Length: 285
Image 1: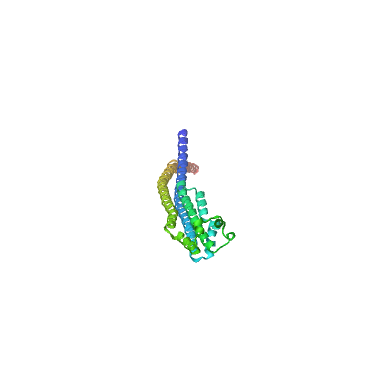
Image 2: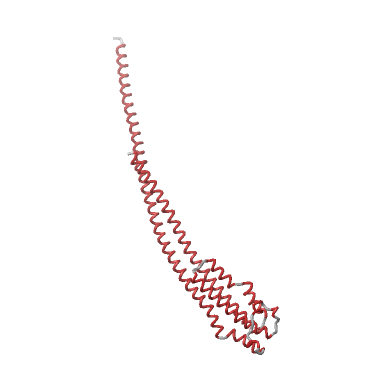
């Protein structure tokens, strides 16, 4: 009997431990899956913003070189080379993407866009060099990339007006626009591929979250069942027997008191009768 009781108590504590572990693990699982879903959405925002920065950096270079070619304002020339040599937005975007450890196929798309942007810089450098040649700007006052860039013989023999017109033409012709598209197309492909991947990751996280919620409900039901069973067990094995024992003790005490009172009454009656008899014998005739 004692061995069975110990076995039952052991099973009871094991059930308690299992319920606690199940609740804790499911709560943690729900939290991690919700967090994964939140991180996936945040990552999509970050990656979209990085691709936007790359596209805007390329557009900024195009805008500044075109403004320089049209207005001949050297401020636009300085802005252009400051972005290339100091700000380095495009390089920072690629570096950040590498830190985020995105899939290689997605990273390669933006690297392709960056490489195509570098190719466009060569076209833009030619246009700037043509204009600077017209105004006979000393090479030691040019940016290092402009200094090392060499115009072809056909460019050098052009008249000043032809050089300016050629510079403007190569910045606005269909070939230039086609090169711009070579930058934008990989960025667009990156966004589509990345959005699909993040969408799939979000759906997967949501599915796991749903499964975790189901497990959490099961764990909660198990905990409630355990509490109901434990409460019933305590009433059956502790409270009810204790109450019965107390009642039994009270009944026993009442019975003993009644027996004692009964015996006392008998003794008193016997004493009274004896006393009466003695008094009657001592009375004179």
